[in-house]
Amino acid sequence: MGAPSITFTGAAEFSGAPLFHDITLEITGGEWTCLLGPSGVGKTTVLRIIAGLDSAVDFRGEIISSDKKPLLNRTAYMAQSDLLFPWLTLLENVCIGAKLRGDQVDKARATQMISRVGLAGHEDKKPSQLSGGQRQRGALARTLMEDRPVILLDEPFSALDAKTRADMQELAAELLIDRTVLLVTHDPAEAARLSHHAIVMQATGLRHIDMPQTPPVRGIDDPQTLATQGKMLKILREGPQ
Image (cartoon, rainbow, N blue to C red; front, side):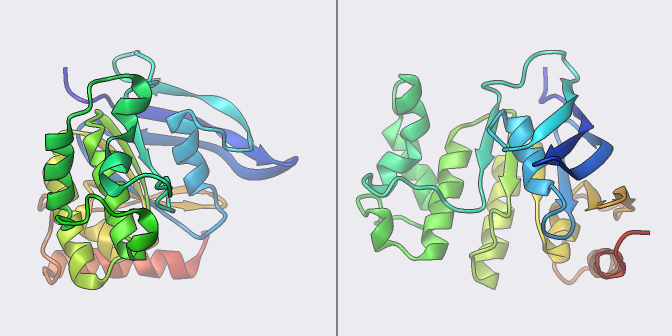
């Protein structure tokens, strides 16, 4: 059975104040869904709730997978910050999930993953010896290493320069084919390039974007990509309708 679709339905409050009202977010199985919107609207909170992490909010709703199975242990989550353990090497950080679960650590695969994100030769370095962009690529390698059917990404490419960002977008798309991916991003160009489905989260609810018929990963300068990017940016600038 392939990666499940997910239906997220509900509302959330923070310290008694509404964060987002009743929404229904459909995340298609085996495809990329991008969630855009202004800061503070609740995008990261949605990711954390799906991941089963503490989100410091009062959530009233439900999360249902298409196969009716719990999502616990079937998700991999990459936060905005790299969250690398400072006392571990890059290689140890990439392997940390298996080690914490008591599984056999596949160092050969981890080394290959580190190489794929362009960090070959840095395996034995601590996070303090890496740049911000290198740490973010290390966090991406750790997430990809988890090999889960549901992948939750919170601005995973934000610290990267333009060339590396494009390279890592393409690598993630390649390695996460047929996975259920929810990507939070502030970058309309990224959403237009990577997503099968794109949704703008606003204070008034969710607004779905018509996407090009061409499959991701779309060309950076493809006219349909640029047109979709422009449409998203216009909606973000206009604000809630």
